[in-house]
Image (cartoon, rainbow, N blue to C red; front, side):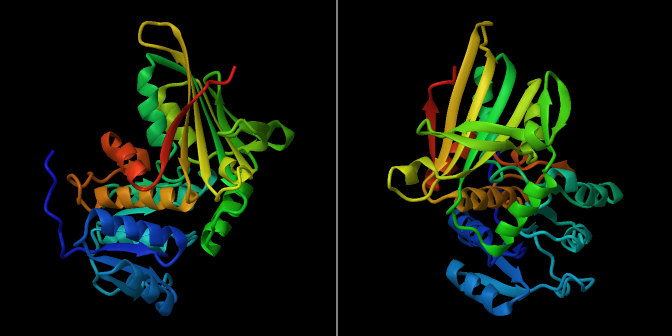
Length: 341
């Protein structure tokens, strides 16, 4: 499909755009689409202005979640991202009234009811994206791509390593803490059945890129739902370790690691196991910002035609065929590792 002309009269609105994820999102959008107008929205005008100045050709706006129009008047954006926990649901409702696609990256798997109910109430308004995949596509899209090597997948296991010294903005840190608390019971798929784990049953180990074993716990971002349905694997699990990344153990900078373990049969029926790693030397925020930018690109119709109104996960909108190129372009790496015994 040919790339449509950019609709310069309709800006992309990033609510919470002055935070770490917002800055990376705006940076990638500006890199991919130099002429698209970007609005950096926040409650603090000075912070929003500094973030907008850093992007270039972006404008700051003040948002008020208690106002019916968010304090934005008759603004009609082409796409909206909400990058903090909006427990009022006001930003999504406003985006629906403007018929603008919306992505939120904060609700935990047990908190999806707000967005889902808003969509059910008005399913024809605009796309609604349930964006809380781990690093917004950096886990799910490569897992689906690598899964194409298999005729049948028996198991998808994700091991994520989040460096304890990784850079977090206050909103991102609050979101992670809330998601971990909300995920005190973690959802996994085992032998085709969905199960909730808690307490000692959620304890696990992950093996980092350098082979170091780290204490971890089962965690359930939306990837577990997406990957189970996208691959058909009867066993799907996500484990998160918070500790020292492999690069920092070697004396280098903080990095983030996503290890993708796949087990099943190849296309001629032979047993096959694969283990890949997605690594970014600047930590988690660039990958998160990249994923949000790519979803906004689709919602705004900047790369291909905008999707029809519907309920989506990010991996259903991000262009799989170009994702790894975009990831490499952002500084990320894809490594093939020896499968675990």
